[in-house]
Image (cartoon, rainbow, N blue to C red):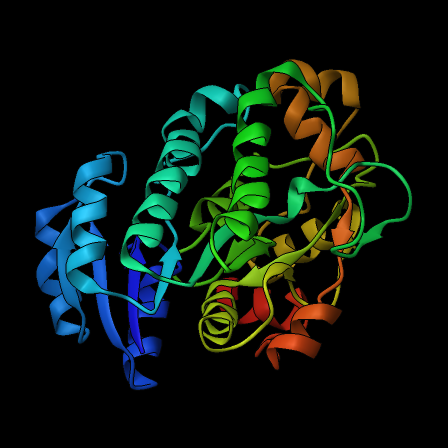
Length: 308
């Protein structure tokens, strides 16, 4: 098939593009940076330098490529360190998730592309009810803190519009990325004891190793009915369990513990909400309908391979 990949030089794209090429697909891969074009060509893709917010340029590039599938991986998350003001940190990514998504859906309609596979996120779920969510559980209606309102609205924009915008719209609700080229700052923060367990660490996180996430994306390019899929490993875990383990395998001292009120002062309300009230996700649907099996079924062996 002809596959048009946006955000192809991001953490996931760097694994996805070679996987698509190895599977026999003809890949057109976009980047905002001309210097990245040679690397994409070396990986076997046809590079296109493209600003995802330039509607006419996006429509023209997709029309020229005539893809069977568009993969939407556009973000601007390089260098993110603090989540104190989420909307400020994610401002550029929010534009790519709203205007950029609309541009790709318009391009798909013009080009007759039936399938769009888009990057979502597992923190879309309400922080209530049971600790592990399936795709049938409700998305968050109101942001837990005002400073994350635009970011959560942008995630919902992808979640709601991609399945409606094309005949075969798929949203992959990725867990927290780790692994080669992804979240290295997380290990740095753990080694510097800058990532504490806050308020007891009852928030449940779902992780996914970045190459496993790329494998699930490849599976969604080739198969799967329209809708949403949680792309996470098999073991959702509370912060109080996974964070000390990450410190151990990274050779760091155990994380400090802070009360929630102090965490809010130092790190902001959104981060405290994630550390104390987040819900994990089940990957049963992705395993069943995409035929995908993560290489690292648990963050335990994945963390050891990554940070150890």
